[in-house]
Amino acid sequence: CLRHGGEGMADVSLSACYDNKEENNRNPDFGIDIDKIEAESAIPDLIKLINDEDDAVVINEATMMVFQLSKTDAIDAIINSKEMISCMIEAMNKAEHAEAVRFLAGAIYNMSQKKNGLKIIFEANVIPCLVKLLGFSMESVLFYAITTLHNLLLYQDGGKEAVRSSGCIPKMVALLQKNNIKFLTICTDCLQILAFNHQPSKLEILKHGGPLHLIHIIKSYDYEKLLWTATRVLKVLSVCSANKPVIIREGGMDALTNILYHTIQKNTNVEPYPQVLPAENSESYPHFS
Image (cartoon, rainbow, N blue to C red; front, side, top):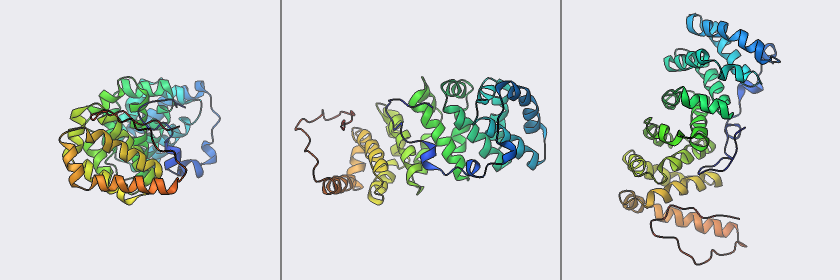
């Protein structure tokens, strides 16, 4: 599992956000002890079923098998099959069968947990498909898509540039209106990574009402990780001359002051920060021990 330092919150993962119904209600027929060679031999048949079948039940069963394989060591067989990756992308883009999209998005997310899988997702140009899924109606698909994009932003060389150019920011800003706090934590962290030291992303977030949504979040929730990520985005945006007056006008300073007050009240033994002020336009972050 990919977990190392970066600009974002590496400790926020899908497992913390979504109670995976596929895992909890696992079909014993798929409860799977299959090696890579067996998986490789099954892949051509699965591709044919996903591509050529009209029966939704058959397609759902085939995509469920792909998802189950992706949770085992047989995932490498999926990662190494260009035909399977292309098949998965096509099926998700068509979005004809919601359950199939759910299983395939889950398989892509599982791939993103491995270094070689993340690289294949990047090289196979799956990012536009993931961004499209940010508009999907099924919540579990949203989780899989946003968390896979988060992994790309954190761990894949060239990931930030590719995600920025995908047109994802309007959809991510719109998703700030969701009310699942752990989903919002990942979404805000994605926006923070995209905006950090990148003026066009800051302006795009502003254009779609990002500051207002972020201020609403920090006024409405008390989940610490969400407050942390949302305030980090506001901090990054606040060094932008176009964003700064909007943040002030919409009550951002009052909201941040309230967070600071409640944090001090909650942690009465916190030592005060040293009186060393960062540069006015600094986007660097405070370090907590």
